[in-house]
Image: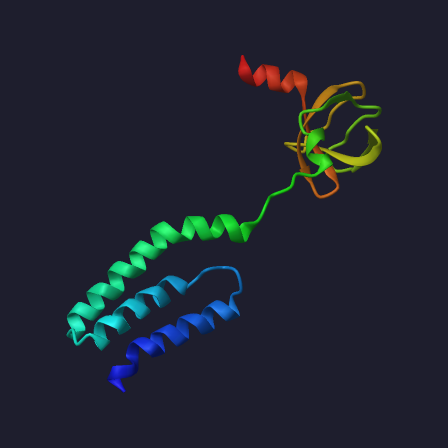
Length: 149
């Protein structure tokens, strides 16, 4: 049984990777297990096998992982909605603390909330600082300037 330990470790890492598709959780241990299994076949003792397992696991983790993540993650595509961040506009109505307010911003109707959930008056110039679901998170331009002073 002990002669199959590295093959068991390899099979376990493959199983975990199949269960966590695309997350690259334990595959590094699989690379180490292959190296340790080869050293076992070459007749080295268990201490050398463990050292080879550790070295190959660490090397594959630090060298191969960034490359693999780049290709597995794919290309991140920004949506057109990201363009609205930084946009400025004036409020058509008062923005109350606990009431959702909707306003046309560009071609879309958005729910608007103030970043600190504070009320804002009609005609206040605001800047979009984030999008949370279907809500624009805004900050008064006056508040922004006061924070920098």
